Every structure is written in structure tokens, then in C-alpha cells.
Image 1: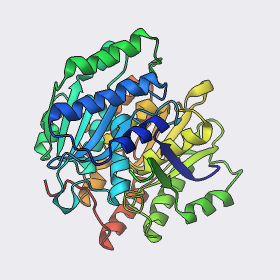
Image 2: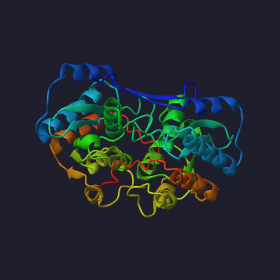
Image 3: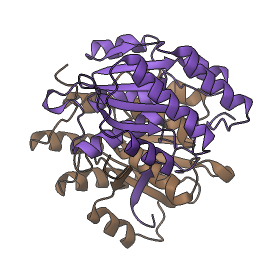
Image 4: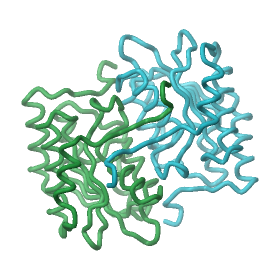
Length: 194
Length: 194
């Protein structure tokens, strides 16, 4: 309680990368996913967190609203999954807790399907579309825990008016997970001793 | 993406309150819950967010590791639920993403049962005990949405080695929710038009 403030800061390489691409648009699901996977891969290469990347796009224009990478270890923060970082950053940048305000259709693109926490966060965020790369089972295959998700989690989102697309560049996304495991990356579930 | 940084700051009244109680311990589940409910009530009184309060305690000593209140509106951040704020603040203050590191038994005390997001966050946080006041259905009764929680959500936590206690000062906790609704507080689910 030194400061009474929580800070989640993007790594420097990601700030530079976003600056370099300012003004660019991403026009297809594949292009957006390629970006999320690139973030996951670079996060591992730079040693700045787990093998997960995400981004929020304005769906129609293809404009990037915010990127996200997993920051659990460097930020000392178990809630700092890539999706949560992208959601919170897009909201604070836009000045609203609702990414659907003013009729905006926001899209969350994530290199791996959301865990139970990130899944629960999606309806509160105001995003209207979710696009996923690797499957939850691909993360579990390398030792991560996805948590207790409803069996029909895509249906739960769809019923709330949030469209879900799965398996976009799944192989490429999974390759980042497998590379992370093969190179000895930390599998950091606090509860994997339970 | 102006700064590449997410900041969640406790309201000033809460920083002052925690300072005033420095060195104090909370020795029973009821005392800890009374504190969480007080935070929920004061958060509404000060107009600094929704009617939810939480805190992380070191279970054995009763020492407060971090408080949390709902900051969704003021922080422009849908993930800033009271439990998430308490978890992230306790972790960043302690310098670890795992509130169970070094064998610490950390306890999350929350004025209302966790929504789907906060529930998903609990296993990743390293807390070993969760103590709840009002029920999820009490929040739903005033119009909040708890999300798609597993039917046996307490069992899901218990199976991961996390003990759950419910209904501690439930009436007092529910009274804060009902007062919030009666005085016209915003029910802010982004998706309640869905």
C-alpha cells in the first residue's frame, strides 16, 4: 500500500512498435491475428512476459485501439493477461469503460482463446466481436490452466450479442506456445501445486 | 495509446482511511467483512464508483495487505472491480504475482460474491481463502449482471485448494446494494442492452 496505485506499463519495445505503425490499418481477420501473434512472439523474445498477445481494433476501420501482451511476471500482477491489458488500455485511452460507446464496434483479437478470467471480462468490456487464434487446449497442452470456463463459452458470448470466431491462424499461434515451452518459459499458475 | 500505461488509483478518501488504520489487525471473518462493507458504502457515499468493496488480508495475522473498491466509472476501466483492484494492489505492493508465495495464506474478503471475471481471477492470484458477504443474486436483484459462472463455482474453487465462506454479514452487505439502487446509482454493464 505504498502508493495506493496499480500501474501496468507496456514494455518499451511494444511502445516503439505501435509508434512505428501509427496510422496503419489492419483490414482482415488474418492481418489482425498476425499482429496479435507477433506480439506474443516478441513478448517471449524480449523476455517481457508470457506467450500471449492481443489487440483491440475498431472493427470497421481496422484501426488499432490498443495492443496487449501478458505482463504477469514483470508487472507482478496475475490479472495482467494480454486480453485484460488490451481492454483496459483501449478503455483508458478512449476515456470510457465501454468499448461500445457511441455505437463503436470494437473487436478483441487474441493469440490464444481467453481463460476463465478474460472470458468473464469480455461482456463487461463492450467489445462486440472476439477473434481467437490458438485454442484453450493448446495452452493446456503446454501446462497452462484455462480455469473453469462454461462448457459452451462461445454460446454464452453469442447470447450476449458478442460474435466469436475461432481457429484464425491457429497453427501459427500454437507455434508460439510450443516454442515458449520448448525454450523453458515459466508456466506461472500460482495454483499449479493445488 | 497516448502513454502505453494503465493506471488504477485508489480514491483519496481510501488512501487516508488505510493510513489512519496502519498497524491495526482484523481478527475475525466478521471484522474483515465489516471493513469490506464499509469500503463499499463509502465508495457510494463519495461517488467514487460502484457499491462494492474488497480487501486482501494475511489470514493468520489479520494484517491488511490491500483494500479494493469498484473503480469502473472513475478509472474508465471495466476490469476495475473491487476484487481485481485488491488483488492487483496486494500483488504489486508485495512484489509478486502470487499472493501465496513464501507460504503466505492470503484471504480475499469481498462485500458481494465475485462475478464471472473476478471468479476466474481468483485461482491465478494465489489467495487460499475467499470470504463473501452478499450473494451474486443480491447484485442481480438490483440489476447487475454476474456473468456466466459455473453452476458449482464454490466447488471449482475448493477443488483448487481455495476455501470459500459465504453469507458473512449478508444482510449488511445487501443493504449497501439496495441503498445504491434506491438512490439512483448507475448500473453499468456495457452489455445490458444486449
